[in-house]
Image (cartoon, rainbow, N blue to C red):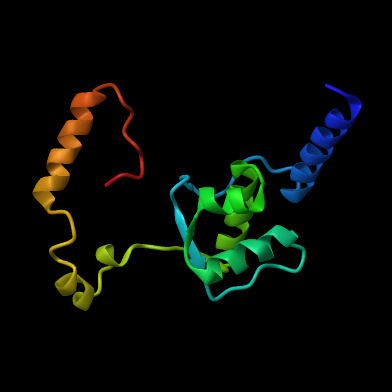
Length: 141
């Protein structure tokens, strides 16, 4: 590895550190598949330029966390920290697929597309059988 490669690595690390203001953990629980859409709020004036890029991308159409990280060419953890900031400012919202919304019209129109209670129960049994020692997620219903 030559000196030039090392300098590029260091610059990327320093930029990521300053991008998140030294934070290494997001305040919100976000999976790689969490889909985000723009909300009514706006980010604060001191937000990173990547926050504006995230908002512009999500304004085109809702996007998952991994896609945002890939398009920004930034580490997923750093992007999750920025997303948490945008969620706090209500500039981003977590997008829920329409098949799972609670409006009566959506329930009637999408009733055949939604999983049944029996299917979900069978799925839970299968997961417990496959991973009997798994810890229960505290926020699960």
